[in-house]
Structure formats: C-alpha cells, structure tokens
Image 1 (cartoon, one colour):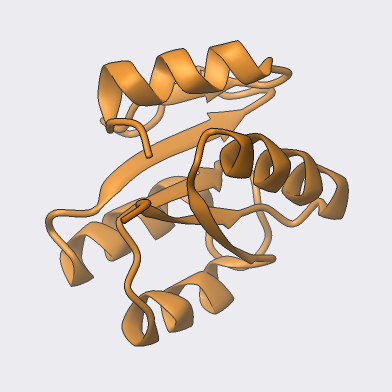
Image 2 (tube, helix red, strand yellow):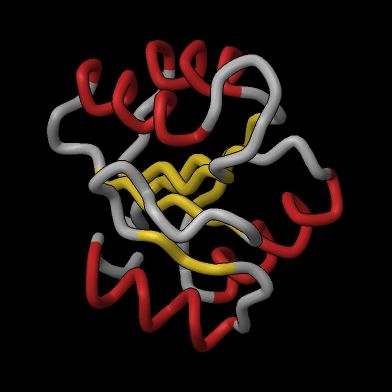
Length: 113
C-alpha cells in the first residue's frame, strides 16, 4: 500500500509539480493550500507524511509541522523553502529541487513511498 502524502503550499504551481513528482515516486497524494486546510485533512484522513512549505500565510510550515506531529506523532515531516535554511528541527528541502533531490531527501529522512 503506498504511503499517503499531504503536500501543503499556497502556490498552485508548486502544488502541481510536487504532486506529480510524488506520484512518480509511488505516493498517494493529497494537497492543501493553507495550514488550516492541512490540519482539517489531518484530522479526517489517513496521512503518513506531510511535506509543507515554510513560508505560508495563516500558519507557517514549521508551526504546521509541530501541530501535525502533536496530532499524529508517527507522521513523517519534511519542510521545503526557497528562503529559509532552518526547519525548526524538521528536515529541510531547499527550493528549487529536482525529482532526484526529493527522492534522496525523503529516503534519507522520512522514508520513501
């Protein structure tokens, strides 16, 4: 059974690219455009991994990751950013990244699909 990944980003283009990359890796993908939407999905859906942008309106990605881990302690978390280098204790993937970068980072931190 593929792992279910929730991708969170307020940029529609980034969501499309990340969803495509993750599906290529064999993941089942859900997406949210905000931290609030993501927290709602976490409560109501089976999610194994969350990949979230750090810089978002309403709830930033690090705060979202903390709240998500409180709800689901076994959740794999990866934060992505084009500007930030610190991920609040969570693994960080720097934008822009390639398909290979995503796969390598997932494999080395939160596991693959």
